[in-house]
Length: 347
Image (tube, rainbow, N blue to C red):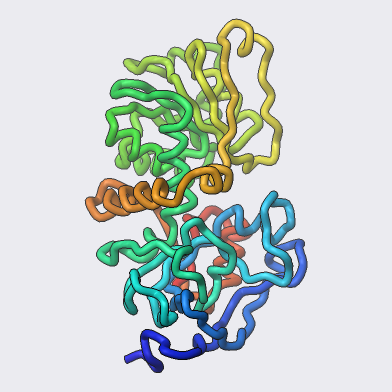
């Protein structure tokens, strides 16, 4: 039983919350701390959500560092996406019920806390018959993957795409979304111990070819295509040499879409790629897409992606971590403890 009425006929308060806050921009592992926040009054159109899970994304880290273009004023609660269960409703809320699972859509700041109060129209109800970590992570990465595959080049069955950063959540999503549509994928991963195991995992998801960066340090990339045609579309989230490898694979008139720069190295493009191959370089930022499209458009896509999860057609690696172990999860997300899957906080 909930400790107070599910619909507030008069003013009522949320429970107190534990939250990860930062009071200035800088090093996340030095500036974040877990604090107790007071109860919040629910207005008529508000919803109190008991958070279930929220990921630690690179963009969350960049916001704390102060290098992300859009970030909340400090002091701030961390986190940008997540899923929660409705705990209580304001008196004017009609389209939601206590116990529903909801995500903030579009994503909004402050999901790294045990209770969140949001206006009802900023929430989207999602299905409950999937693992909570998928509902918590569907907005930033799988949505990015699907939109990049649809918004730049008209792909048809049999087309080929190429990407670096194939082990990322976006990369794993691209592989599976491509397979569903009959699109073949060439995937580039960085050199690492256990690379063969990683290749096998990606091929089990549906990757056609997986190469390490060092394998591709040759002049003739066509020798790696096998029975695949040259890719029409490429995705880059690394920059530097890894971006150059994507460009080398692309066919005449191909397009490379950049959505990240994990290496912090610039993209260097030879003049011949422009003159003789007529390649196009584009960029994708989910924030821009979400602010320029109507809510119903991305709500339909989110439901489609979660349907794929339910059907077993979309999956990716994650570590579900208890909220009390936040700082260890943050260290993993920062790469201080080696390579780890996406860290998802469980409240």
